[in-house]
Image 1 (tube, one colour):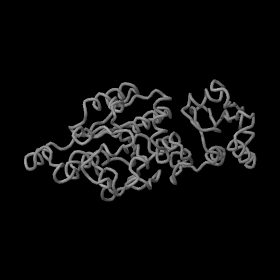
Image 2 (cartoon, rainbow, N blue to C red; image 1 turned 180 degrees about the horizontal axis):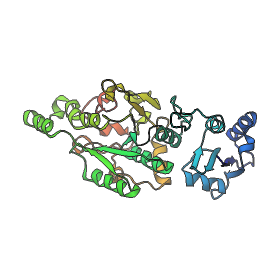
Image 3 (cartoon, rainbow, N blue to C red; image 1 turned 30 degrees about the vertical axis):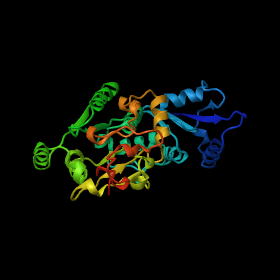
Length: 330
């Protein structure tokens, strides 16, 4: 298969190549791969309009160096030197005669490459769980890969009107279908009949969230092999501080099944999420402009003040270690 390879390097203001570019060049030289690079394009630190930065923006890449590999099968962006080396090694052949996708995990901790790895391995069978700003970043990344992907949302019946409008906006922006999962009506009716509409203020939100979110998620994942989340460690250091990029999800796998949970933003923080949203003009929930940093159901979400952590606006009447709905608790 004929390939054309463009390598994008970053040139510093001093005129030198960045240290990482030098290290990657040394790596591909040592592996005898330099001859596979057809051209080198510079992302000049002193010139945002330089060809390298233009390519970075076009392909949604934030790090240099990276490789753009063009072939009859399409365009592939590679940000890892190890992954680049594997492209030109003898491929492992699967049952269909195609190169096998690594089962050990992605070669990069860059979200775009993690999303690309997951979709290359599972395709639409790896669904994006969509609700907030982080998740729409995943949708944008998936769209940029050009690979098939699927998205689902949990409609608890108590979402803000702005959130519902936001879901429709994302559907229209990316031209995708979004599967919607609702809570079981009988379970909601029983809860309200026996405990009223605001029982969570008295005995905690676990039961309500179990009916409105956890049970629908279990249905959403019942036939899936994998799913992607927008989890970040800084969302809740108490409960999400140790966050792997790829993990086995035994909680939602079900009897006799395996389920993989992929967290592409596990090495990002809120600042990087919002930098991506603004740089790529990705839509976000308008409630964010009114002090809502973490958005859930309307009765259980409120704006936070400057200096407050984002999770302080969720279930604010409970202890910080209990501010999880159950979707991501082990």
